[in-house]
Image (cartoon, rainbow, N blue to C red):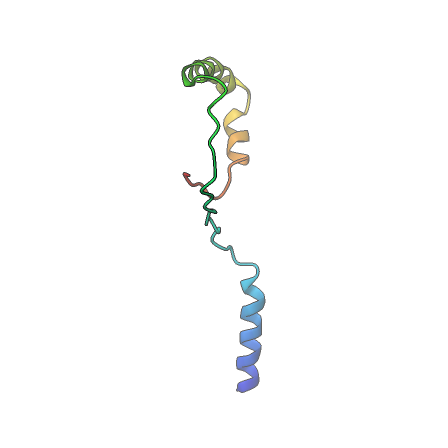
Length: 77
């Protein structure tokens, strides 16, 4: 019985390497960090986005390609 338990434990350890792991999102704290201002005003970027969005959405297979490139984990920083 002991040999069977050891075998089960070794199989579990081997399978654990293939199970999805939670991402480690611990970010470093850097008190000397200096944020750079945006190169363009937000309104300019917003207007450009409004102009380009209809073109992007009208491309063939846009939604299929977007779904295929989707990542499994989403988070907000």
